[in-house]
Every structure is written in C-alpha cells, then in structure tokens.
Length: 178
Figure 1 (spheres, rainbow, N blue to C red):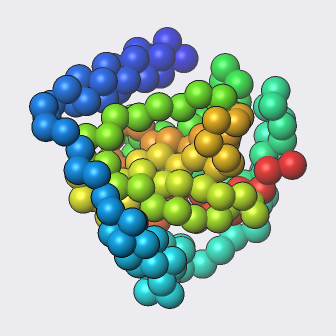
Figure 2 (figure 1 turned 120 degrees about the horizontal axis):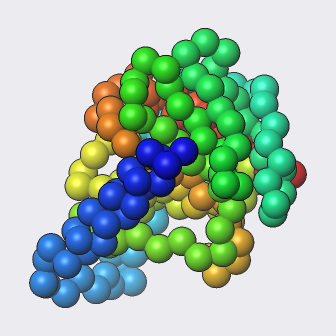
Figure 3 (figure 1 turned 180 degrees about the vertical axis):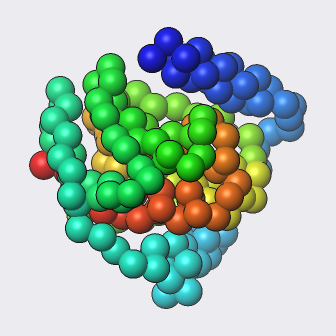
C-alpha cells in the first residue's frame, strides 16, 4: 500500500510539472469551432471508435462512502479491491499498472496536451481526457462539473499497450452508479 502511495505521489508531481511545460496561452475557440467540435464528438463515427467492441454486465459491486459502484471485472487476469475509499483494479499480466475508481468533489488535471471527449456512462454525462494524441483515455469523470463525481484514472506503466486499454475501456463502460 505504501508503494501505491509513493507511485501516486510521483505521478501527481510529474503531472503538475508538465503543466508548466508550455508558456503559451491556450487558444480560445470561437462558437463555430465549438459547434464543429461538439458535432464531431457526437457523430456516429466517433461513437463507434469510443465504444468498446463488446459491452459487459457488471459482476462486482463496491460500496464507497459516497455510493455504490458496480462494474465488470474480468474473471481471469484482473483483480479489484478497496483501499483508502478507492476501488483499485489491477491486471496480473501488467505489473505496476492499475485503475482507480473513486468519488471526489474536486478533480483537477493539467491542460497541457489534453483533449477531452464527451460520453454518457451510467446515464450520466462523462468527460474522458486523452493526453498528447494518445488513442486511449487517461481519466474519465462521471457526473456534473462542480459536484461530487465518479473519477476513473489509469496510472503506472503499460497504458501504451492495446490489451490493458481495451479491457479498461470495457470496465469503464460497464460502470453502474447506485
């Protein structure tokens, strides 16, 4: 558990350091650009790419202080447990790789190299963050901004490999919040 805290602190520090990497101001989008971007995000082509190939029914339930979360955990090769009011999901084939599922009323990220995409998870609005043009999401928030949200983050190594990311996507889209 101490190891996870040390790794988490290291990831947080690296993320914060990356925020200062560019000194340029972010570009302000016009209403036309916003509309075009939202249309592209909500197009059928985008939905096909964002959705996992197969959806799974939840097979595990976790009671957290803010509510209960059900989700699919593959029976072989993946495990999940609650530590410090977070569900920690780990793939056995990829050491030092994990997902966190937890509730938080304040979640902030660095905007440098970030692309956000809208989605619906468990009937609630969700936003997934993709860094530096990567094809796989790095975090997802479920719920309205400035409220307690369900947060799903990926940390550690091996998130540049296809198999853990595809499984993480299936897990993400299986989530039901009670």
